[in-house]
Image (cartoon, rainbow, N blue to C red; front, side, top):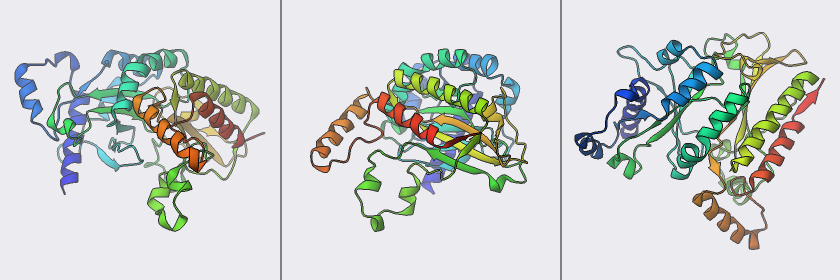
Length: 341
């Protein structure tokens, strides 16, 4: 019950933050005092709103009125849908009621400081020059302008990104139950929950949070293959230059007869690329590029793993390897899963 109240309060904070005009928000001493004693219903505002507005309007061709409408609800409707904790990071996920966008919290300091201070402006420049990039479209970023007891004690995350929902249109598709999703990472790294614990001691819920396995092939015409690999090489070079690791390829297979909605710029891997064998349409984005090797948390874990490997000989984890090594294995994984026609 308490967790539901917390999530309900957070969804209202996110909705209010996305609909609030940041230019009209002014910090006051009274506002600091009131906010400090807040645990769940914290105040959020858009960070660098002009930068994200340019991405949405000029690069990705979103209709701004439709974008804002995704976050407005009528009386009696919840502000957002709770999607739960989808991984080990402690992040919470919410979706808009129309299924167009996903909001992900960034509760860990090393993640949101990396995105906000190191990656945001390079991300904008890169997306400006590569409008059909496979990197996920981040359309907004919310932060808490005040220090609150809720954020100090870790009750309520103060940083949230808004992303496109690559599953947009599934709910309206009569064949929606036949959509397949895969969250893919290189599997030849050391994962403690997989490689240290005996199989009977590892729950299905734990294993389900590891990277998926795609036991098939992407059937691509050569021109589509060449364009996809070129985009993958450019995108992963950008991430490697930023020293990012542990990102994943989120792949969606849609029945060929389906014609789901795709928002904004009609990039092939977002609208749905027809497979060469005529059975599927493919969507794909690169997700979760917030783990930077140069941040303190990653450095500390690297030292722990190196110490363990003196005895364990298990090799690097995906979060402690070098950015260039992760990129190399990520690209090899992508190449391996493609059959060219």
